[in-house]
Structures are given as structure tokens and as C-alpha cells.
Length: 232
Ligand SMILES: *Cc1c(COP(=O)(O)O)cnc(C)c1O
Image 1: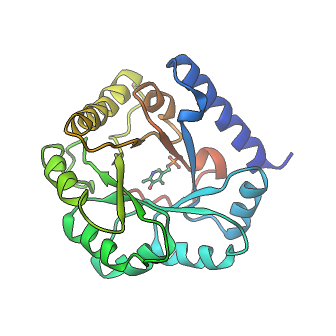
Image 2: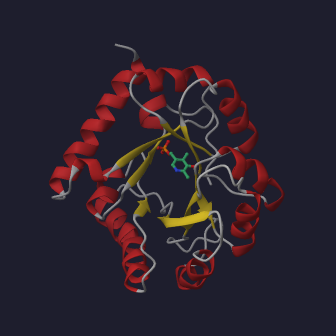
């Protein structure tokens, strides 16, 4: 069996175990394959092994793959930092954006989303680690932003995304994910109707699923270690 197919199978098993350990339905956790830095052929292989949702962080690279793989019914998620002058190609080519962290970006995405496409699914990226270097809206500002975005046309606010501070300590991983989960519960108590918690990567997906992740974003555990890892 090809390596990517094998890795995908192993990841699906990890998701299944984590969901069962959490008393959750396996189908309540979706796998987003993070394919940044990997060539189109790797995505074709993953698709042949049953994976149709892909996450990309770098727009130019992503657009090349969207074009090269136009023959496949893929679902594209943008998960990287967004420059305000790049919102149009994002609005035109992706089904989801996980990394919205300011109103201006959301407004531009709403304006540029073609009428012929379904609403663009949006997650707010929240900076739960408090590190200045990290993108994301501060948790205390996320509520105001969420309430502003929910009224915009052509967008559907689905939930929250976070990239926690890396740590091997499972309790600390869980504590960070819990911050996002609490914010999610508070926003839903305010009537926002969110259904998506985008959290958990190759090294912390079990902790994320225990804390309620509905999308895990997994790259290196599927495709291998990236040559020039650029974190964001
Ligand atoms: C690269 C990236 C991932 C995947 O990370 P891995 O550790 O390779 O699984 C997930 N989310 C975001 C936002 C990323 O940039």
C-alpha cells in the first residue's frame, strides 16, 4: 500500500480511538488534510485513498494546486494568514476560510464571494496562547468580531480555529483547547449557532478531540515532515 494511503488509514484510526475515548460519534470529527508544500500528485494520491478536503496556507501555491486538480471534486480550505489585497482569489476558490481574525478581511471576503457559489464558510482564528507572534484575534475581542461577521452576506460563520503553543504535555494541550471550547460555548449561548471547532494537528489531535474538535487539521502525519516548515 502506498505511504499516503497508509498514513491516512493510521490517522483515521487515531481519530476513531480519540472519538470513542471521548464518548463522541466518530462522524462528528472531520479530517482536513493539510497539504501545504506538497505537490499536486500527493493530493491526488490522498484523494484516491478517500480524502477530499485539503487545507492550504500559502495562496499562490494553493491556487496552482486548485488549477492542477480541477478535474477532482475537492473541498479547499484556506488556513493561512490573509493579506487584505488577496481576499478575492480566496473568496473565489475556497469553500472554507479558517483564519479570519479581523472585520476588514471578513467584509472583503463577503464582497468578493461570487453569487453563484454557496456562502463561504468562516472560522475565526483566536490567539489562545497569547503569544504576540501568533495571528488571531484575542479571546476577549472574538465575541465582538463574531457578532459583526454573522450579519455579513455571502458568508456563513461556522466556528473557531486556534493554533496552540506547542507542548508535549497532554494536560497543557487540553487546557489550551478548552479555552477555545469555552469561547465557542459562550458564543452559542449568545445564539450564534456555531458548529465548528477547528483545532488539533498531527501532534495534539487526541487532546483536541477530547475537548470537542470537529475538524482536525493534519499535515505531517499524512504527507511526511515538511522540508522548510514555516509556522504561522
Ligand atoms: C501546517 C498547519 C497545520 C498542520 O500541522 P502538522 O503539524 O503538519 O499536522 C495545521 N494547521 C495550520 C494552520 C497549519 O499552518
